[in-house]
Length: 108
Image 1 (cartoon, rainbow, N blue to C red):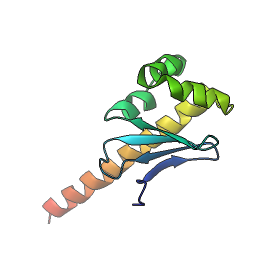
Image 2 (image 1 turned 30 degrees about the vertical axis):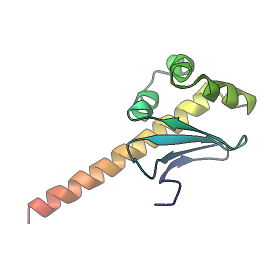
Image 3 (image 1 turned 45 degrees about the vertical axis):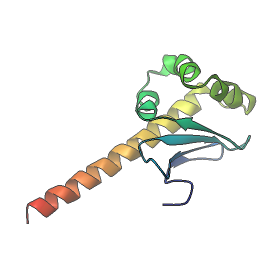
Image 4 (image 1 turned 120 degrees about the vertical axis):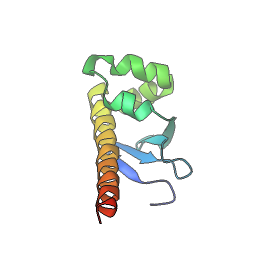
């Protein structure tokens, strides 16, 4: 894990990482603006599983500055939705790997 947390998703515009102090919380990095935003526990799941048409409203409830900053950088709500869903999927993959390793240990 790097000092800024584990990278769950990254492209040329966005990065989603875990928080080093609290892996249940996350950060959204809008790379063109160098801004980053805290996504408290449970928010990544909500955003990662949000219906396509509800992303704008959900982001406004989390932090209105995310939508403003993303629009300023030319990002769409669809691109944010992809980032959140891919990052959330990565957290689920990690959980499956963790549970599988526990199951393998208990079956020895």
